[in-house]
Structures are given as C-alpha cells and as structure tokens.
Image (cartoon, rainbow, N blue to C red):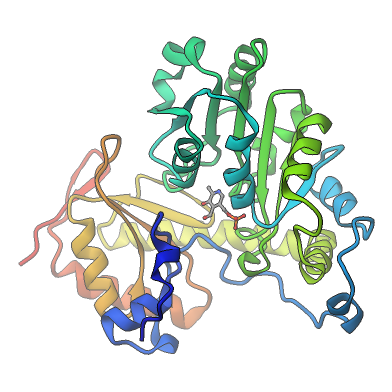
Length: 357
Ligand SMILES: Cc1ncc(COP(=O)(O)O)c(C=O)c1O
C-alpha cells in the first residue's frame, strides 16, 4: 500500500526500493531477492548499542574521526550522514562554477550541482582533456557506478593539478573503493582542491546508519562542518561506524569474500549469455538493448535489478548486485536459465543482442 510520501521520491530514483516492488509486482517482501543495490549483502553485523549512547547527545571526541583516518589512511576527515550529504552540500560551497561530471554515473552529482545553479556538463573520460581548461570543478566517481570503470591515480592527479592551479576542485567519489584501496587517491596525499568522498554503505553494508566521510584539506572540511551544523550524525551511527572501521578481522575476510563473489557473479552472467560491460566486486553492469525486458522478466520472478534508461552517453543497462547466500545464488541461476530461453545470444562488442519471443 502506498503512503502519502511520494513527494520524497520526486527527485532521482535509486535501487533498493523493495517496498515499491512488493506493491507493483504483488510479491511478498520476504520472497524478493534484491540485487538492485551495490551494497555488501553480508555487511558488518551491528551489536547492541548501549543505552547511554541512545540517550546522550553525540560527542565529537568519541574516536570516530581517528578510526576513519586510520582506515582510510588520511590525516583528517569529516564524518557526514552518508556521502550523499556531501554530494548535496559541496555545490553550496562555491560561487557559480562550470562543472563537469564524468558520465554515465550516479545521477545525484549532476542533479545537485544543477540545483545549486551551476553550469553542468557531462563528459566521457576521453574528452576531459579537451574541456578541462574551461572547468572549475570536475566530478569523478571512482570506481564508477554503474560502469565499474577505474581512472588511474596519475590521470586524476594531473587533472587535480590543472584545476587547483586556478582555484578549482577535483571531487573523487570513492564510495565503491574499499575493495581496491590501492587505487584510492587518498594515499597520494590530500592537497587543497582535492575532495574525496567515502561511504560506509557499500563495503560495510551499513547503508542504514547513514555514514560517510569527506577527506580534504582542513579549510574545506571546516566550511562544510559549519554548513552542516552540530550533531549531523546520530550517536548510534557514530558508535556503530567506529566499531566497524576498527574491525580489521571482518574487513580482511569481507575483502576476500567480495572479490570471490564479484568474479562469481561475472561468471554466472556470462554462462547465461549476459556479458557484463564492467563492474566491481560489488556489482556487475550489463549494457543490453532489451535491458528493460530482462528487468521485467526478473522482477516477475522476484529478482529486483537496477535498470538504467538509455541516455545520451549510454545504452539501456542493468546493474546486478551480489546474492548473499547459497539459496540466493541458486535463485539467480534458476531465473537466468529461464530467461536464456528468451534471449538470442548473439554477441556484439560485449553487448548481447537479444530477441524475445
Ligand atoms: C557512487 C555513489 N556515491 C555516493 C552514494 C551515496 O551513498 P551514501 O550516502 O549511502 O554514502 C551512492 C549511493 O548509491 C553512490 O552510488
């Protein structure tokens, strides 16, 4: 049953709206396999939060910042209530700017820069050089969601140098970086004009606590902190996030498991004639002329995927997240077997051409 809060979703649609799928397809919540997000399906397990944490105001010297600095390998960082908050706030910290977002990607960046009145263009990785002289801000999602593409540290540093020299910013959204920490820009040292965003929603699978980090120079973090005001994270969020960031044993095991699962998902899709065009350990991305039909066929069987419409920079596509356990892997295989009868597996440059009967 829908409630009266649909205005909240008036902006951009994301994966993970399982209740809307329950209503649309008439399948009970517990019968869905939700692969529509790129979240770790076996996230960090939250233990009980002490009463005192619920009952007092959040404290800034509770060790969260230092745990995050140690985990991310930086000298200073600002916790935010999800990296989404930083995506919404950064555009308010600049006067009118010419901004480029490497696309296709997580649509919230472009949306929020436009909402704040900036001039925003979409670029592909290959035409950044051509435009960078005219830009004030370049936004890169690394690894990209949903394409999985990773841009090298050297390339990013060269873009940063060109932008920061004239007071510009390079924003690197590393929400999906935890499984490939060696590719993170953080280790290269934080300089003015470089802003890195991290999320605890993906690798840690803690999307519900709403916690992310901004890693940048002190002056920018100070401005953002003032804009966000006091208690921008809840005490329980700070408590849980600090514990997860300190749990190295869990991190090492999950890193290993996610790499295996990512390869397995790629293999399973390939075996069923669906050849991913990219991905990370947490998701696979499939460009397909009939992405919408595959989405619908899976949804009717209780598997929710993330569908991306055709845009000026990309064909229609699907993102597959990771199943959590044996039963879920089996369900995915069973549904893909059923689908393969409908797909004509003629491959064309990594894109499977399908015809439905
Ligand atoms: C690339 C990217 N960045 C940032 C976010 C926001 O994540 P959160 O606010 O949970 O940290 C998302 C959410 O899906 C995302 O895909």
